[in-house]
Amino acid sequence: MSFDLHRLLADHVGRNAALHTEHVNPRFARVLRTIGYDRCYVRAQGPHIFDDSGHRYLDMLGGYAVCNFGRNHPTIKKALADCIALDLPSMVQFETPLLSGILAEELKRRVGRGLDYVFFTNSGTEGVEAAIKFAKCATGRPALVHATKSFHGLTSGSVSINGCDSFRNGFAPFLPECRMVAFNDFAALEREIARGDVAAFVIEPIQGKGVNIHAPGYLAAAARLCRKHGTLFVADEVQTGLGRTGSFLAIDQEGDAAGVIEPDMVILSKALSGGFVPVGAVLVRGDVWKKVFSSLDRAIVHSSTFHQGTLAMTAGLAALAAYDETDAAANAVRMGAMIRDGVEAMMPRFEMLKAVRQRGLMIGIEFGAPKSLMLRAAWSATHAMDANLFAQAVVIPLMEDHRIICQVAGHNLDVVKLIPPLVIDESDVRWFLCAFEDVMVKLHRATVPVSLLARLGRNAIFGGRKIVAEAGAP
Figure (cartoon, helix red, strand yellow):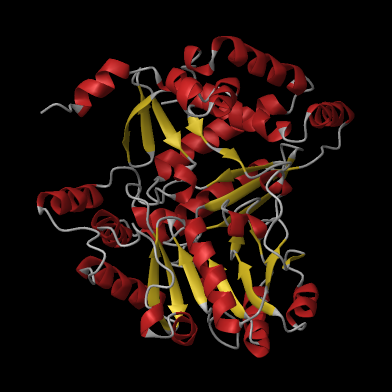
């Protein structure tokens, strides 16, 4: 055959950064080089990734919570191989595909709550776009409400309800009547919903940017408030879904004495892909659905070319099987608690450790200004250079000295975020905790700004790939 993937990869190995610099995104390639992330990965298994020199890395980023069941899970790989081998028809378009019906049935069984229909998408942001359209059509109302620091995607509608200006700058004008309320402020939400013009309140059960967790009872009260005023409650579980927080959905843990949360729509994506084929799903209450697809001539009033592709549906079904096989949610609870306890045990020793926010394996480690004079000067100097810089003083040495992949929790935040595959084990947790403690020891020195600038400067000149440290990493 004329196409040989093995030969193609072998012929171009190591050219990752050069190709991206020339053809894809030179700015991002430069960022990766500066922070020492310009590695060439060639293989992955579970929570571990291997570079072209054979070094093993611990993935605490999980592809932004895509790889909940680890990379290259055997059940998902086999399912996709079987799908290709069967020569199944895909995207006939004027058909009712069997696999999408099976996946919809299975998602409804797991989510429950009387959500009657499933619209499949290609991504999380496309799911948010669908929810926005469905809400406006079903209610006839113009307004959308979201929270400060929210993140719901980067397409035009989704970015209109994004609480981070760094993603919004340069892309105005946004959708009209998108209103933001303070995170966790029920009184502010009540004022907006009571105006009577709000189609939907779109909310992450736990915010991805910063790993911010609502006060107990907030989400349940918000759902009841929406129902009272005819506003749709939309749970964006794109990042929190499929076991990330220790239950299938994060809202499974957010009910109160009045009962479980009953959203009008739930949005899923990321982990539903199994780490292979982009796929998302919007589970929708029947009365909402029927107002959108209200007649035969509106049967495909909202649709997408690829939204029920055979490989995508197979990936979704196999991902659910892997969720069961790995006992993902229970393992997230155990390993998340082990990380939280380990970091909290370090807090008395390290002044800059401020808080740990954790639900399952969605963890935010927050840093704060120290009390001692010398360390406070180093803290102030680092922030004076750039408000985004301090958290990189944690992330960069975790990568360079310990080969642990993680990232900051958002712009202008002194928070490092951990969203690893849900299949990490105790040895992985010990790897992270030992590395984190080493970084904390070095961070609590007055020379932090100088050492960080030295790392950034060295990487800008030589590239982090040239300086793969051996010490401290298995």
